[in-house]
Length: 114
Image 1 (tube, one colour):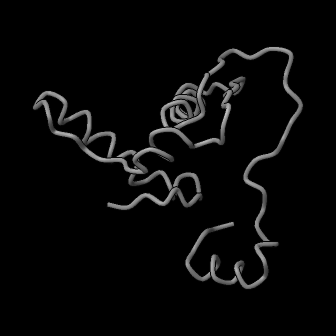
Image 2 (image 1 turned 120 degrees about the horizontal axis):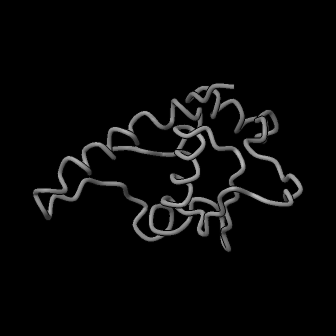
């Protein structure tokens, strides 16, 4: 299923009944290889890149609130490059490039804009 402006509008008219669930509620496994505490931007990114880059699949993310909350989703709701220290510039630019393609890669509207 692809997201588009038309699809969002059409689903709104139908009461959002046609969306495929993006996650499910599986029973916990007896053990995991990785346990990430905090399901905000940093925790979810850690889980995502462990799976994508290193092929890990036994990952649990524990979050006391809602996934994606925290600094990225609650406090500032902003992702930006901060050039306070010149040595950090390449790191921030690389991070911004990762965010730019994330919505298409995941087929999920993360509401990223610049």
